[in-house]
Length: 265
Length: 250
Image (cartoon, rainbow over all chains, first blue to last red; front, side, top):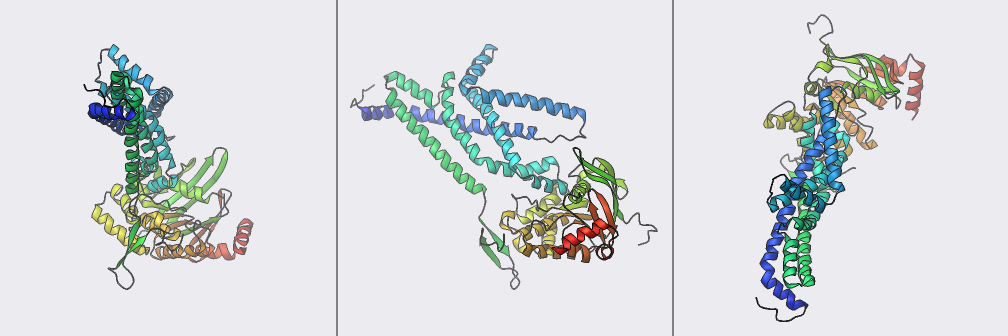
């Protein structure tokens, strides 16, 4: 391999980009793959946990259902407390090497996604529970009053609003996952930090390599936050609606901007 | 009608209903019945148990004791979804689904609970929105509507389930004064159309002019149950007289 032209900072940067650029990009790809799957799977896991933990217990329910819910609730509590209460880097070691000890040799990428998903799930469970609680009780009563079951009101009324309300927190988790997936280098998954570590070790140029790595992380997180903001806007739906018909012309329709359309309130 | 007695005319019968919240007895021993076509206003001071009574009838609160009979059958043994679609409710704070348009608010219960087709549900929803004068706004979200408009949509949503009786829990209490009229006029139309209604209200004008019976509640019991003429011109009880003079002076 050719040595860099200049022995200064920019010389090394240029050289590293040239020789390690594609590996860095591959590492960034792995990082995003782990972060996206971890966030999505963690969200689904958290959703499941939050839904189970908000099942209402009625005084008249049979004893079996009550005991089952209590037990499951207890197990889920333990899960949340343990995974929120220990560092992910430690969880990675315990799960990866622990499973190897009982004879399960996980693929490192699979292990990485598995670990980040259950870790994210523990946080998401609490975020989503908060979202569910934040939807005003009146709407549940409204659903109840037209005969909708708990599940129907959850699916059609509560969860869509809860998820919209917690979008900023979900985005936050996603960004945290992009950054914190770096700790998974301890199980040798070739994500961005791991690639950086090997590049830096090869040339013993830690500062230059990690300056590049830092820049790549920042581009990833910044782009992600912008995209999430757009998604949120989209979820809010149109800012205007159409008023159909009028006294004189029944087929007339008027578009109305939010706020301005409303004569009172 | 050819029925010889009024059993078939009797929609709801509340029997010895009691409701405690902890040690606090909110409803002490409530019994009354509602016949088809009745428009009953329930009046009384705050804390007298009016809203709790309505919420117990709708099972938003589980009664501590007593029974509610729907057409002579224990409502608790009936299918809850069916009971709720027959016994509708309109809330003080509207309780519209804020993630749906006015139209979808009126459709969803029909398709999910009554299993009507999308097309049929939509047609009915539009018809009821028309009835409350809200068709122009059917695509608006609740947040884009005024309080009075929201309440009219909420009434349309309840009507779309074809209820046999509609419970109103202080439907105008959360509204600005200039919007009270539009909601009361919708309710007046419904009463004239023969809908059976149970209305918890502070609108004494409505109670006097529209209802055929007025129930005065005081401290968890029905203190007086009579025609509006009797209640408003010649109440039998001292406490009814006191309440009315307090509220009518305002």
